[in-house]
Image 1 (cartoon, rainbow, N blue to C red):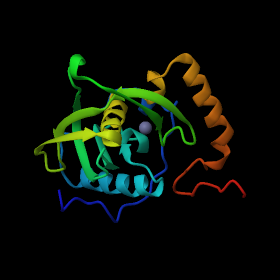
Image 2 (spheres, rainbow, N blue to C red):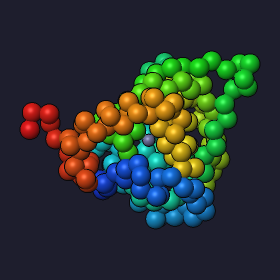
Image 3 (spheres, rainbow, N blue to C red):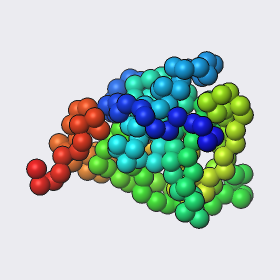
Image 4 (cartoon, protein in one colour):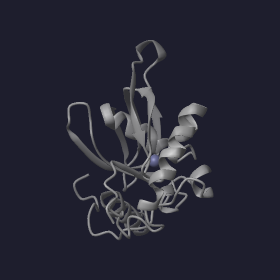
Amino acid sequence: MSDEPTSGGQILPITRWGTPVMHGPTRPVTDFGDELHTLVRDMYATMHAAQGVGLAATQVGVDLAVFVFECPDADDTLHRGAMCNPEVILPETRDRALDSAEEGCLSYPGAYQTLARPDRAVCTGQDLDGNPVTIEGTGLLARCLQHETDHLSGTVFGDRLSTRSRRLLSRQHDELAHLYPDDWPVTPRHTSAG
Ligand code: ZN
């Protein structure tokens, strides 16, 4: 994946929860041409500007099944790539260990809640040329692969929280929402002082 277009993209505004594209199904990627490569380049630029570890196409308003990631695993090894048409395979119940950690979403900025998820996940799909790829994730990468694949079926992590946690998340977001301009990260986040 060394020739992937990870730089030179244009920063796009990040779509927020509540926008219909974030809560519905996506179309599978079938055309691996220039348009997809341009989209992915812009998604990398947007993820970097927002200092995220993953970004799904729906988060830039596009209903296509592709996400990008640049995320450390449990051994602190950084993994970077784009995944089209992803499917997550989780360990069988008897082999499953849950990791409870704080989770946030660039489309609901400023808010974090603890969410238990399996601590490893295998994600299969296709690269930007349509070749099959498999990534095995541990630590934060396992969480990222699950979070981004969820996005592409219209699920946000708030949907996986209890009513109480969801309420706390919403309160936290409301308190900090004024720091994020409508077109963030095109316009950077305001500092608390300003
Ligand atoms: Zn998200």
